[in-house]
Length: 173
Image (cartoon, rainbow, N blue to C red; front, side):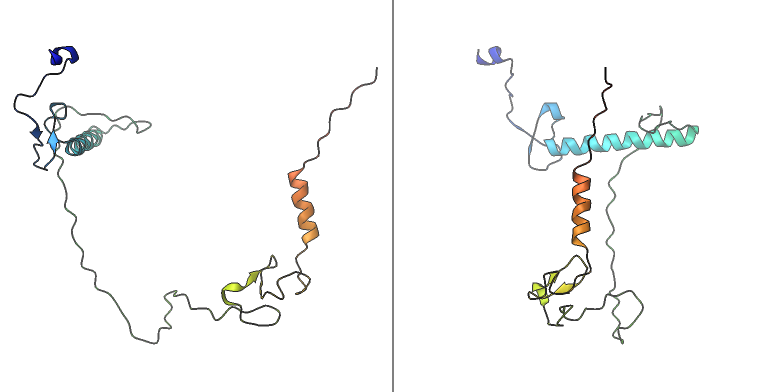
């Protein structure tokens, strides 16, 4: 009586295992496959249809104007197979030479130093807008005679942020 109300029918044999023997349970709606196997199978079918349509286009000499519409050629049976990737054995090529080859290797930079007093700053250096690196003492623009014009830069930023707004003049009556 309970099954008649909900419209569900009980499985007489119980749960069904996936036909691909992956260990999960399948259902009749997914052709007795688990959801992952069913999704993989549907993807393979779509790829086979696209391959058939592209093969049909090549054989017939036709092409779509936008390329978004898949065309299924009749009478073409294309099997989709899984291709196992080949393992490539890469041999490392080490050269124990002078190391000054022209292969574009980045040379390690020396220690970072202050642009004014030449003191080593390491990670605690301060980059200025003029493009140089300075220590804590010379980080301010008045301490290292910075050529960067802060006043003009500030004026430009304010001018870009606040455009001039003018209303149309009214005619006098």
